[in-house]
Image 1 (tube, rainbow, N blue to C red):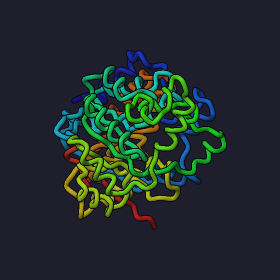
Image 2 (cartoon, rainbow, N blue to C red):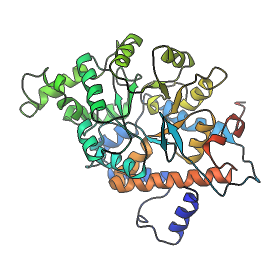
Image 3 (cartoon, one colour):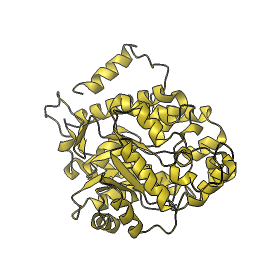
Amino acid sequence: MTQFGLDYQLKIYLKMDADSDLPVSLESWRSSARMALQDGPWGYLEGAAGSEDTMIENIKAFSRYRIRPRYLHDVENRNQSITLFGRKQDSPFIIAPIGVQSIIHKDAEYASAGAAASLGMPYILSTVSSTSIEDIAAKFPESEKWFQLYPGKDENVMKSMVNRAEKAGYKVIVVTVDTTMLGWREQDIKNAYLPFLQGEGIANFITDPEFLKMLETSPENNMQAAIEEFLMVYVNPSFTWDGFRKIRSWTKLPILIKGISSEEDVHTAVKYGADGVIISNHGGRQVDGSISSLEALDEITGENKPEFTILFDSGIRHAADAMKALALGASGVLIGRPYCYAMAVAGQRGIERYLNQLRAEFDLQMALSGYSSISQLGRHTIYKKSPY
């Protein structure tokens, strides 16, 4: 990792990169993905709640925090590794849980999980993936895999999925709490598009023994009935802290709560046995007009920062964004929409190309700012602009 950014950059300049046909800038990845996807899948990937103000604010918030470069420091040897739950990771980047990946590329989660395994990054599989818990584990048995759980209405199904993930070798359970129902997403409404209605993204349900008990016949014989049952149990508006306490009791694996943006909720999570939180507003897909994830992170990691794992999600587009989130106290950062742009363009090859670009950019960004390791980052390394 010492010279990763320079070596990768030089390889491109010398035209020694086998993936030179693929985009470089994020906007190029995005525009290429738009051309590759039909309106329905594109709107589902790119859309957000209401006016899309939260999604826009997630990105804009980074411009209000500025990096303080420090020079005349030895940055020849650099290290961007982190340690999560006792395991070393080569970079601070984690592949965020994004469901229904079959609408983005034919290889679906095999592409994203494969890229994560190839690059040694933690991979979070969504509850509503197009590929089952067991199939991903069988394909990539040695990689760092986490399972994201949507707390649904049927406790038996939820408990079964947690147990399946633990048995299959997943290392962390991520309970997403900001999706107790789907947000008002105008692009999906305009396109009359909800992939679940076509049976996309329900692989973990139609392979679950507890869910299958709820059906009169197998999904192979009546997929429509399975889809309708899924829609009945998928989310749960009555989910509370007591519900989380039950999930906590089902496993000894570390559990993260994803979707929190309130300092009070973070401290409550500690009381209820969470091993950490992922500060996130679901990429702006749920609550229109909410606080940006970065500003929530700034509040949460202030004077009363809890002593447990805090990860960051929502809005990261460049290495500088990741650097700012890490400086504000995040232990690692999740990458979401951008890797799906790359998936839409070129499957696993596209994701690996994009993530290698991001890691190279991060390496150079750190070095040029005067820092050789993530441990050197802190609030003293950034400046918050006045809002006035």
